[in-house]
Image 1: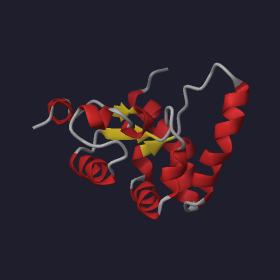
Image 2: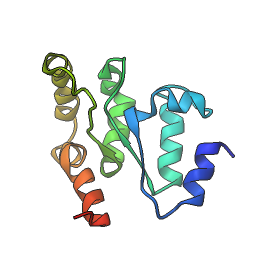
Image 3: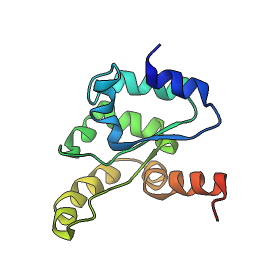
Image 4: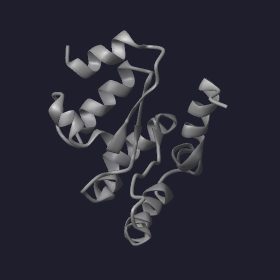
Length: 129
């Protein structure tokens, strides 16, 4: 069993949020970057796993592929939008239309889950405040 899967299995009550749709992370731990089959299997196996759809160094355009849109739709309560592009509003202006396009390609419910409900549910579950 891979190291990451061992972590997920050992900590079933801990919510693990994989950043950047696991870009590079999956490659390091045995998957391939943007490997939809591996991500699907992880989501089916580990209910404590979520992903954010922000990406790093690559365009989010691959998320518009039909197979990715189906995955985002199916597991919308396990995906969330996040970004760490905080150093430049001009960078955000370049990337945000692509993310809006992805969310607009989904059902209203799935887009709302990814855009706000998933993270809200995580925060409320752990009652940080």
